[in-house]
Image 1 (cartoon, rainbow, N blue to C red):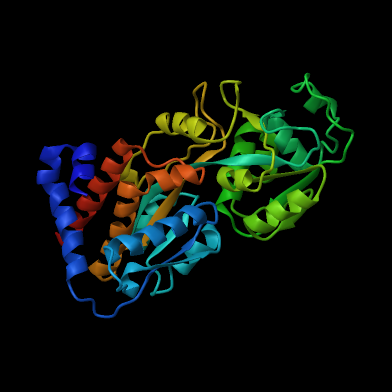
Image 2: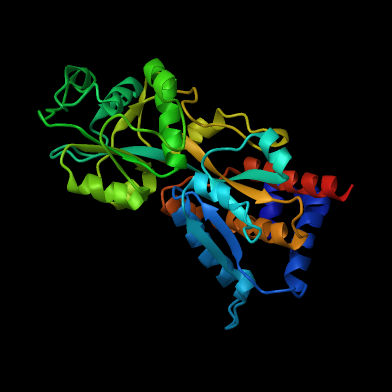
Length: 363
């Protein structure tokens, strides 16, 4: 931990306020809890695979090669979607929500909550077309909007062919698949459609739940991927890592600079580098359709939203301890699952945000 913090913040910072934060979290683990219970979270299905892996690592690290495990070292996470996760924060036993839709500073202040990014990622456009390899089909925001509006209904439509002159697209019905539950992935996708299509923005806008005008809507990412796999001509949006693990081909998508970019780490990093992260605004930013030649336009961040007001300090300190370990030792796991870990500079700002909030709360 000390070596990691020194790399991120420098020895002087570690010796000062940030070290006090680390010591505070460490003393929390040594103090006997009033009642042993797991850290309870709920929300994003987009980030569920990496949160599950981090939870496994957290328990292993706290066991420190021993045979004893405490419920305090476990994480009970329900993948119910961003919207439902935020709604569950009203339940007193919940410790954090994971959301792909940032909450405004005003709303957080009103409810006495904190928010910080935990991982970055991208939404891939999966397709089920025979003979079409991954990254071989180009799609644009206006095309995607018109497909989901029901205005483009065949893969042989001239509007699709014009941006794909080198591939033989079949005269096959397009079957759009979408999420009907409240989903942060839906928000990221429709935010991109709204930025690319005035018609989509006026009719539907960006939201976690949409009354889809065309296609089939299903509950959750796994049902969505199963539907695409079973349907020739299908198209859908889902977390890049999960699309890859399902062995589904995916499109390259046109960005604001006019370049066709693949989903994945390079495009996400380019989008994140163009984003202004402001801890004074509780990091409430969007990575969608950022400028830059290499930026993937359907990029996003997952945020942890943590109740503070009226909460026992040990409750939110445990959440921070969990994510601190994830920042320190979980980058490789994030990359292996198709995510992009927070860059060190952003981790530094998150930890300073924690410290500033603690100082504010003590005054």
